[in-house]
Structure formats: structure tokens, C-alpha cells
Image (cartoon, rainbow, N blue to C red):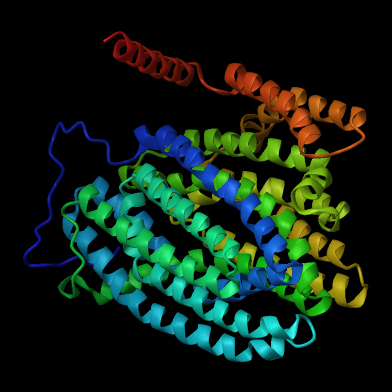
Length: 535
């Protein structure tokens, strides 16, 4: 643990008998539900924005936008995982009332990330200089200049995020995911609206980059203000920077860093291979089903991220039994979220892509491979988050890194040697995800926490799979009956399946106590509205 010394900030022990729960257990459900509700903005934007770019600027411009994001994503490696480490340390320090530790951790992180932000900006300018060579023959010449500016602007956007990472950790480490996601969603809504207005007024890719940078700056400024309100004792000053704390953050972050490298190698490097092998248009096509699956990962991720500070707090309190219970319950919740999206895409995926983007975006077996590969890895995200909170994620990081190297090798073999095209890229992504995310990660967690594998499988997978039967039957029936697909028939097919899923989840998946709480809140709200009308 980092050494914490500051002459003007004595450690404050939590008051005896205090009813405040800083472990975050009592806020798990609220934080997850609020995060899911707020994420609706991203789902809508994920459908609207790519179609708008495609309609206004063309498929190649959309591919350039995707490629610029892929390139800038590599620059996040400069952080070396230290930002995510603060989430865990800050939560444990707040749970034990260690004010000095909180200040030291946040200040040290900010000092380290100032250097990282400068490095990111330098990398962005370097990548922009190299872009004409990377884009030669793969994109229309008139788009190359815009692409260079987009890379620079998105790099600056990432630098702003790095500089203010400590405020993200304060909100999440204080278990205020409602504020974190609420601010993000509200600001992102205005950002997307501004991007659409810019495109409607004749703007291009550079305009999108400028709006993205401004939106991130406003978002992080608001988040900083909220952090000081949630945690008034927070101080970020040079006097609190400690070398010993920096070493601890780097040590912990390094184990988080490996999975991040793995994710970038598997996701972005394969996108780079698609760009280099098949061109910008093919990358735009390949990115759309991955974008749909990314919504599944993000929904489960919002559930999983809540668990990092919670599991860190529980481990600091020595509550191993609660950790085992949370692991199984949250893994089941992850499967309940990931399974419907996967089933929907397996049965109606091509129809969705065609109605959304047009005939040129239907990819058939490519979507099937990506969906199956994503399912098991995404559903196990809560398991990985618990391991991170326990500081027991080192071997998982190594396994994911090796899997990513395998994925890149497979992609090169299947695309460049065997000419499998986009299907080869999809298989290269899917197979390592199943092997590591779907098998190794849960087995490792079960071994560390002493959970029998059979008990884990029954609790995390069997029941969620049974709950999907009515949903899948409705979708398969619609698939057989409907011959002409458009937006109206797609809604007609999904609506009864969605109703069947909601009914099944309400009576089968939701605990009775949670149903009673939701009904009680709904009753109180209705009573309040009635009193307003009668008054």
C-alpha cells in the first residue's frame, strides 16, 4: 500500500456507530439501474450518428472516422493502467476514513497523468504526420487532410480525459455512479446533437472532431465540480504527491494494463488490418456489427465497473463470504443482459443492419461469429471486475494478453494468407474471447474464492439461459413469418419478444425484494402526482 504522509491532513477514522456505508453494497442496484437508464443515450446515438455520417459524407468518410478512433485508442496505452487503479484505492481509503490517503492518491495520479497527457498530444501529431502513408490507396485523396486533423483533435480529446481522470475515480470510488453516468449521458446528448447540427450545416469530419473535443472538456469540468461536492475533503495539490504512492499505482495499474493492451491488440489492430487489407469502406462495414455488440459490453460493463470499488471495500473489510455471493449474483446479471442482445443479433442481425445502414452492411456469418465470441467474454465482465477489486487480476491480464497476440496472428493468417476477408477477422476476434473470457476468467475466480464450478455454472448461466426461451421463440416465429423486412416489420417482430422477456425477467429474474421496492416507489410517485392534480 502507498505511504501516506501529509502534515496538515491528519487521518480521520470513521465514527463509531455511523450508519454510512462506504463499501457501496447498498448502492449496487441503484448505480447499475441508473447506469443502464443513462446509457440509453449512447444506444440511440450509436444508431443515429453512423447513419448520419454515412448519409452526409459517405461510407469511406465513416471508415476514416472509425479508423481515427482506432488509431487514437492506442494512445491510451500511455496511461499504463494507473487511472483505473485509483478507483480501487480511493474506494478502500474512503471506506476506512483515510482522508490523507484519498488526497495523496488523487494528487499523485493527477501529477502522473499531466505527463501522460503531453505524451498523448505528441503521439497524435506524430500519427497525423504518418497518416498520408497509411491512407494511400485506401481512401479518397480529399479525405486525407481531414483525417489528419481528426486524429489530432481526437488525441487532444483523449489528453483532456487523462488530465481529469482523478475526478472520475472520486465519483466512482465514492459509489456515485449515478452522478458519473448522469453527467456523461447529459453532456454526450448535447455533443451528439451538436455533431448532427454540424453535419446538417455542411460540416465534415473536422467539425465532428472539434465538437467531440469541446464536449469532453465541458463534461470533465462539470464532473470536477461534482467531485468536490461528493467528497468535500478532496484536495489535489502538489504537496500531496508521493513517490511511494506513484509506485503503488504503477504496480497495481500494470496488472490492469495487460488486459487493456490485450483489448487494443485484438480490437484495434484487427481493425487496422481490415483497413490495410480491404480498405476504408470494409472497415465501416466491419465496425457496425461490432458497434452493436459494444452496446452489450457497455451495459454489462456498467454493472461490472460498480463492482471494482465494492469488492475492494469488502476485501479491505475481510468479508470473503459477501464477495462470493456478489460474484455469482453479478455474473448471473451479466448473462441476463448479454444473452438477449446476442440472441436478437443471431436471429435478426442482418435485418437490423439492413434497416439501419442499408443493404451494403449486411454481413451474415460475420455477425454470427462476432456475437457468439462476444457473449461469453462480455457476460464474464463482472467476474473480472471483482478480481480487479481484489487485486488478483495479474494472471488474467497475462492470459488476455496472450489471447490478443493469438487473435492478431489468426487475423493475419485468415485475412492475408487464406483470404477469408471479414469472416476471417470475425473468427480471429471470437475464438480467443471464448477461450479466455468465457472459460479461464470464471475458472480462475472460482479457484481464488473457493466456489465449486458446478455451483457457479448453475447460478450464473443455467437460470439465465432458461429465461431466454420465450424471447427466442417469439423472434424465431417472426423470422419465419415475415418475408419483407423494414423498420415497421422489425418493430413488429421485436416488440412481442421484448414484452415476453420483460414478463419473464419480472417474475423470474428480479428478486422479490427488488420488485417490492420498485412497486413501492411507483406507488409513491403515482400518489404524489395524484395529490398534485387534486390540490
